[in-house]
Length: 241
Image (cartoon, rainbow, N blue to C red; front, side, top):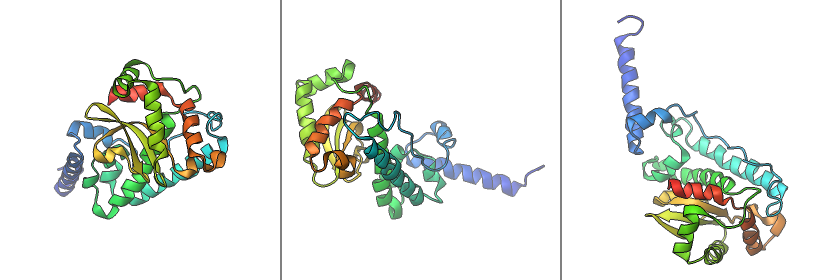
């Protein structure tokens, strides 16, 4: 066998089979797995989709720098440390890892819950805000909110109350659960993905998200945050759910 020994061929074949087997654990078909194997190994901090001072009317520039560059980066760094030397995990998206958390090795499972959750949650958080945000959702999402909560005002009040009631650190969420919109909350960096739910809108109510500007006035932060919600992006997430 020219250029490559039979042993090398068999080794490569075995490695490929093991990789496909790992993908199957996460519910990924061999065809879809092709895309996973072309993902750059490791996780990266996504850039903000707007300037650090773009949300000044609700969130100050210094908080945005600290929150994105320090806190979110810290979750990414710790997630990469947890999966170091595990290329079969590095090839998957963080969302895949969280949806299939039972398939993640037990010795690093809590690290992935904490830091993978922190990475996924913050990535969504940046994406559902914008300098031209605020107002009310339109289209299919707007209709679904009015159907489920009777009015946008009712939804907003319930969402604010839910997020404000988080004890200590956590998140307030609008999710899709079996095709139905629901408002829920999670502790720490737990993601709705862990329970098979699809997050559409997430509000970080850890103190690091608002303390420089609002101190202990979490309700004021929550009300101001509605002025920067990018409902267009949230609506796109709903249509893809």
